[in-house]
Image 1 (cartoon, rainbow, N blue to C red):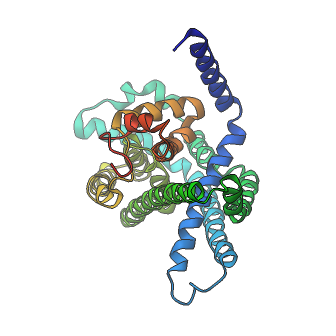
Image 2: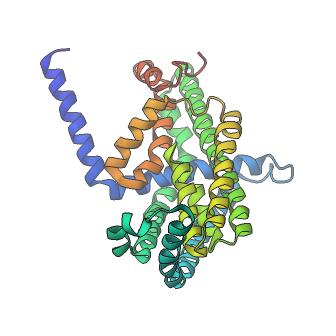
Image 3: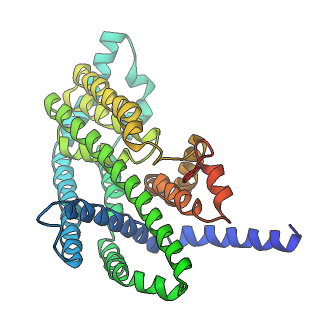
Length: 344
């Protein structure tokens, strides 16, 4: 590779990073709309398998699937708002229990938490913590109008894309090849998103009943937080377990409920993450653990927590797409878990 090409590649990468940082307000809603579009397609495929629904027009199935997904979106935002309001009202109880917990740690375990965390406790503001959690979650849906606009255009383009593909490749052999390629990419990405969402829902659903049983305030909020954080590999499940554990400790002012949350929710994360998820996902998550860590760091640096949430879905989709083209297949192999992609 000559120096001119190296300079071009360097300039392209630099320009791409700048665009990703400064145009994230446009790019993130588009990525979210693409993910929602794939989820709508998954719902549509499920509905089309129902006997009496199968004969319905495609546009009607698309409309019903879109309504289901958008209803879920608005319900989620409303649920978060209600639960944050409830948690905010109980903040004085949490703040009072800080001293109770430190005294309990001193008497039971001879640990001087008040001395160790004096500076931290002095500036501890649970309202600010909850506000940051809330803003991070709602930022995923914050620009709902932009996501909705992108989604509408994607749904419109979906109906015209087959004709465009045929016009792009008038030769029947090439057209059939590209049609198969697009279908394969669509199937792989849809399967990954559907299975990952299913696994995350299972984790959040089981955690909800645990938190409800223990008596933790706003269990639906914490269950949804666990569902969302489950999309972040490795550290996501750890954070999702620690958050409700800490708040259980502060809510009750004693260690038993917090230990119950830590042990049971942690066990759910271990079982689902290490046993159920690998069996369901199979080779869908065909990505190297090192690549997971690097992409987590990279997207987290570029887009913060939102980037961390989207890091693996973006990388998996890129690997699936790159694996279908000869020019980018070596990159896909390098990023994969065992160097096996597609039909290899």
